[in-house]
Image (cartoon, rainbow, N blue to C red; front, top):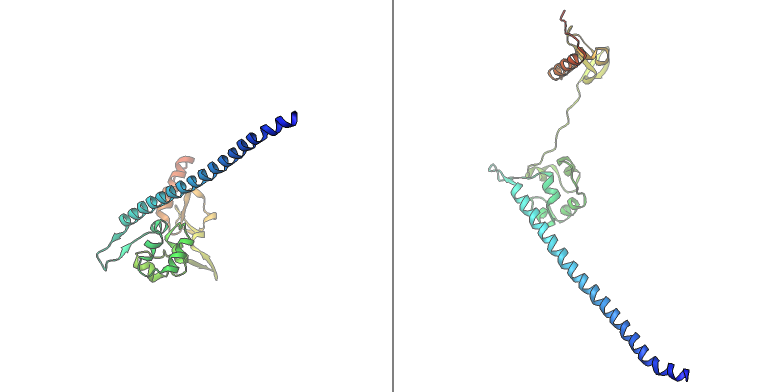
Length: 198
């Protein structure tokens, strides 16, 4: 008797289990498809909005100069522009645009000169020039050359010597005398030192 009851119940149970499995699989698949489609749509919309906003910002920032019609851009504009906008610039082709995108985040305009395909002439067309470094001045003392920043003047006597030999309260650095006068005056105030001229 126990076997007959079990035989009668099994087809219903098997059918219920099978339908549950089919429903679960179907809902999972459809849910995944729906999620994929919606995320793709949302992502596309978001990227389009971001590209439009950055393009508007770049257009606003770019100043057209009347002398020769040169557009002035900064390194920030190169960070914000997309591939198509970069290719629209004079002297920038497909490969150069890829190189620019690959080397992004630029921290200053000097980093742009490291990009393969962007030269001085191309960047000059968009108003970017390389900053020149200040050259050191060398001072010859007994046949030995010393950089200028190792020297200072004594504020009272006016004598020039190595800065570490001159007391801090009277030290005027070579090439920065005016700035040093303000610093030494503040230091003398803090230390209650009076400046006595000879």
